[in-house]
Image (tube, rainbow, N blue to C red; front, side, top):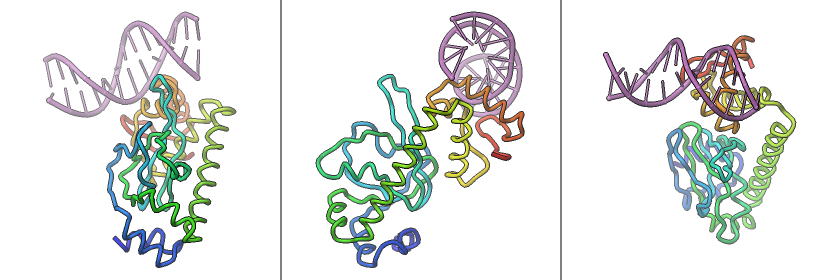
Length: 210
DNA sequence: ACATTAAGTGATT
DNA sequence: AATCACTTAATGT
């Protein structure tokens, strides 16, 4: 276990902190599609992603989902950090986008580490900033972009987190992520295919040139 | 062979 | 851009 942590975080954290992580952290492997946490569930830990990617969603009263952003390897979910003090509940749903390996750090030690290790503090602040930027980008695309541009960005994100030109998904899934209808997604994808950007198949999309 | 699920399409709002 | 209604195609049992 030490090796995987070293590989992803060794250059970031001092040896003492790495040891603490090894000591209190729990390594967990989750499969694609597995739920990490759901709306309203109490937050007990902060995840450090070792490998894979997590998608973070929001949901409205009518069960309409909206994708906020992806968390990739070497990253953490900074929104959880704000919830550390006090018994707060999750405002989001997190689902494994791909098979993912991560370390769970109990929230009890997080605050302690913030004061104790400068590297940890910087990591948390940086991650918070990254997450905030991604959120702003998402807001921008929703507010100012049309559906075709939102779809394009979504496909680019998907291809990126999967490190693969084959995006395993259905039109319906995409529609859910973007909170639109399947018909709209199908039609826009068709346009992209006609423009030679992608290739459509049942249950997956092959990226040609985005 | 039949049922189920994914995707394509015209028409309407 | 969303919804409806219907078709076609792929896949599972």
